[in-house]
Image (cartoon, rainbow, N blue to C red; front, side):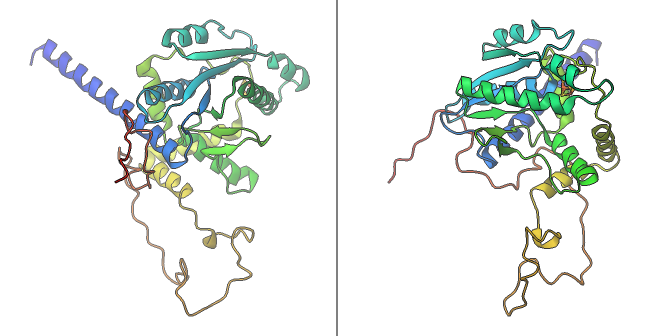
Length: 320
Ligand code: SF4
């Protein structure tokens, strides 16, 4: 085989892999939107764009889905310029203008507030994110947004699960959809089914103009870093474990935990009828190896009848 033929074959393989990755991410996002009813007809989705790989990918995939989805929804990208030293102000407006999406850049100097209030050497993230949240809710109101989309992905959700278990004494993760703490906004995480390593590859392929996230000079959250390393190490050594852990989040059995608020253990009674999830106390649990990560890993999840992955034109039933 000549050098040119080898190059061609390599380029074709790379293109094939890139298309496969884009398709997988699009399907994961579409499935998450459907499973949690994240986006509905007429929604105005405010996509929070930090300049990191995840929020770029989120915006890009949502814009792709918007073109073909059987429902109409609008998208407005919002970036909060927190006035960190060295923040390259021109990058996001240039990118957003080039792709032709409606956007708003909000300038609020939360950096100075945080620096003034938090003593030197202490982690600034908690105050910083609280300030950011309040501003984003306000902007959502101003823009008439009905949904606020954040770029957290599957691995963020798993990290949060372990952080809560290790340091918070709670079995709690990061939900794909929730009502904001002020009760007035719906927050969605359409990347809930997406793997971080897929998003990293996608960001490279799409050449997003990523803005570094360490401009504020804050110390990295050590606990989060430790959990991330632990989870990544498992991913390398035990393929399929992360997929299995995520499925566990979708498969909760309150009668086999120990939360008296979630299951009425005190009122538990024997009876003549078979009891779902009962009678296994003496059996040895059996586990199969987790399936390896693949395109169809979420194939078993129930799907809504109308999917955002369906394409236009809208299909209507003749009713008889
Ligand atoms: S890393 Fe910096 S910008 Fe990000 S939340 Fe923490 S303090 Fe805020």
